[in-house]
Image (spheres, rainbow, N blue to C red):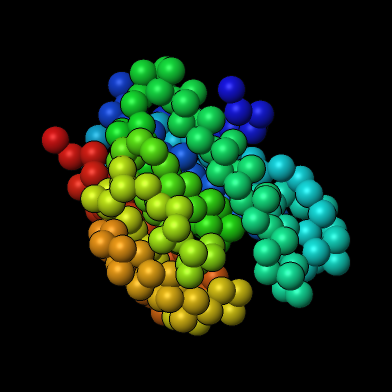
Length: 218
């Protein structure tokens, strides 16, 4: 059982799958809750929004905030242990969903910014087939080494990546580098870019809905 606090939103009776959606640095489980009613979903889904642990974040002067991992620009490897621990905690949420009757193959991992790092990190390493992997305004952690750790279980799993061309927090070039690393490994990446910064746009929400509807279609 994962120790993470979660917020649950269900869009209808008898959901056909679950989306585990991770927030960005300093946000919380409520961050993407308002997006759910905006998604024009054709079938009911269960959304699980976990809260990241509160921890000191070096890039913010050691201030404590909700973060999936620490960020220290002078030492890029400092967050590695945190990332693995956070991925393990999300993996336990997958276990919990499976125990409640939703198998991993009906579960999508999604995340924004830091949350997207965890979603993609776990998604390509998971030793069980998932429904989908979604990374919004994010990057692929340690993309040079990802080939050493990937699991082939999700090589055909749809991956949705989206980024703002004017993102001041995570330059789009960094996201494209990660995308290309995944494509070289034959992952199926659907890429979207938008005229925005580090945020989510109405068009992006429409594209997410279309992608989810394809995954959870008949």
